[in-house]
Length: 347
Image (cartoon, rainbow, N blue to C red; front, side, top):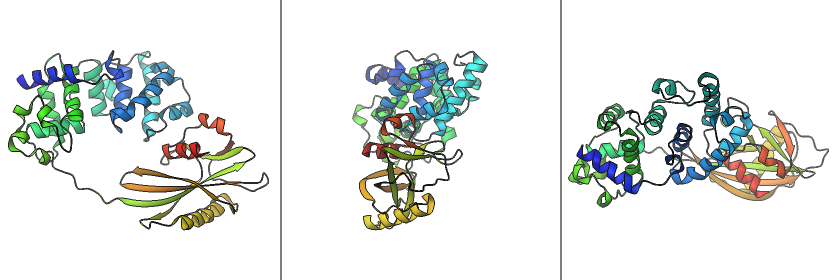
């Protein structure tokens, strides 16, 4: 128990004052864990605060329209997670009287909740002795016990055995916090580690070898073009189809133009004009450059060139998706992807 006690004492002193740690309410822990699956704490905090102001309770989330839920999630990506939260909230209201269930299997049965999230809510919100294994925990335990490779089942089993009785809430967080603040992927701060005396990787002088580095996939570079179409003070938006990537979100017309070509601006402009004529059924002769947006997703680095033009009221325009002409003030009603939210800011 010496190792566990050292971690618990370190956590009491060094834990970050995060909002979901004030009261350990299940709803707050659940939302934070879903958000932290895809982003770091510092990045997630403003999104978490915005979400809680918009949906302060499970009931308020359950009764909100999907459009508002997606807008509340805007900027976080992986919008299926927002839809799953919405669906699970409705289940909690209808099947559990609006009270977040404490039973692990019942939590696990909620839409979008897997082994990690169920364990996180059960242990952090309800102090149940359930293991949770994320990247931080894998790294900490791999170094402490010099575990080669990435045997996640071994880590799950080991982590569960380490949980001190009655202290799951703080012990599980101590492992994650140590990985986030001290046992870093690169250049770990071993001098600040409270359990370095128990760390086999530190003793061997091989912290960089645990866990084994993953093979990096080749980054694909993408050129893309988007157009801001204005008509009488309104701007053209269309909604991506349900079931597609980013389905249900609104955006300005956009096209992928080239891969790994590093196209010059004038080529992107011309290709964007050609694609607009084909897909929207109208000529865009007076395109001007409005800005560039860079975004990264699943081993892709995209350079999105944004153009804009004004159209006559009589100009023909078509779209294969549902579309609207919206004023800038009305943008707040439409959930955008992160990149297209930045395009809206260019207007």
